[in-house]
Image 1 (cartoon, helix red, strand yellow):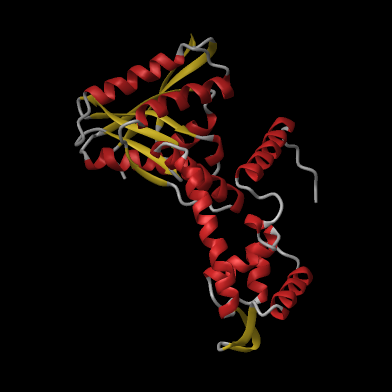
Image 2 (cartoon, helix red, strand yellow; image 1 turned 90 degrees about the vertical axis):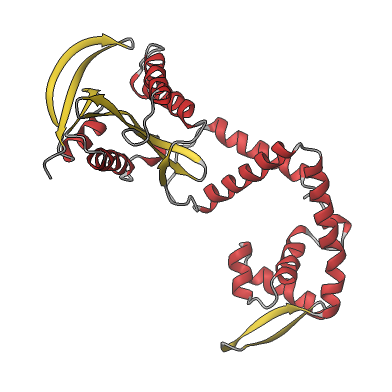
Length: 309
């Protein structure tokens, strides 16, 4: 396996969180004072919650070594806690289930675990509980690779400020633009909110797992002209085609709203965005050097004929 460079501070932060969570969740030592280790209790819990699992399913879902799991199951079977029965769908395979005694023996510990987690959550205010559960779900999604689909939707209260902040952060981090850009983006966003006509204007917000990962605005520039503004895509979504999806949705809306032309203003350093505009049929109609946001740039005006297909 090739070495992958990872920030040492990030590694230390994850390790520190692991130590903290292990203490906070009471994962040190025996499970809730039972005779079982945490691993043994995890196996019993899976069988308690889902009757009839194969050994291979337990290995896969719990990440256990097959030999180690086999030894655990033999001990549980000798103690009368589990039983095996043929799989009705595959007679070559056995399904494992708790016996009546095994279920009765584990039930008090399952109830105690629920009470312990309930007590942990009770220390938090309702909003804190929601944040904790949401953060845990995000950690699980990230580490399991289940990031969910990107949804493109209309803006909701709170979105606009997030978009302005993302624009300022991205352009500062990636292009070195200074504080001058943020008030410009804020003015554009404020004008959109204050004079928003939902039939003629729209903000397209890309969201994945509750997080805003991109956006673009279609605003009315007057005289049958729509203007594309504030396109951005988070670095985590680059290369996924999200930028093109946002631009295409913006163009489609402008056509449906009977605009004849769409225009936009960008800068020559924004090569990824320029490539999208060009691929979607925009033509650069003007360019002019300028010094803005603490940088020497070349501003460009691009236009698209919406009456042509």
